Image (cartoon, rainbow, N blue to C red; front, side, top):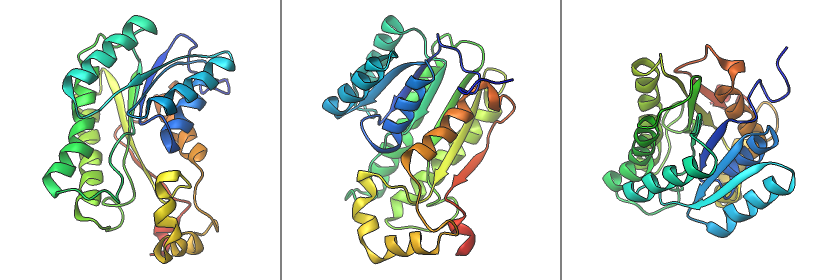
Length: 247
């Protein structure tokens, strides 16, 4: 029978990008509670320092790394530091990306949002990954199940899903790759959207009568990484409480 940590081993290591807040923070905290060594990456150093401090205070292992996931050299150095301090990461969670409220040009935004995930993943793939490696990329229902503005946001989330399927097919004997597509989630980044009528309507029409909490997304991410999902590969998994069924 699988343990409450989905069968993950205490000597495993996970890299979580965008770990300072929201879904990334919740994922890092849950992985730490499972006993994994957590390499928490974010531009917000104070935020990841706080996350790692909480993990360590609870008896876990972690390290905070200031990372711009669009910078090749910085990402390579972050993987080197992770390997030297915690070990080679068996797991990767690509969560970092620009918010939908960012004023970005289309091509620049796709490079920042989807291109950065591809670059981070390629540098991870260059490592001697342990058996049972897995990556979970964080996309959205936007671009995959619903249309959304601005133009670059849904397009980048669809690109992330497409790249994940490529990984699943091309590297299936070496790792598993899956993608989660959250709907509205109660995070600081979503606060401006949720304050608008369109955001309030999303929660009102949700069959569950509410939007998601970050921890509910994190638990699915950790499941997909884990041995409990050993034959789940190439899946786009919506986590929206059924909201898109009501559109």
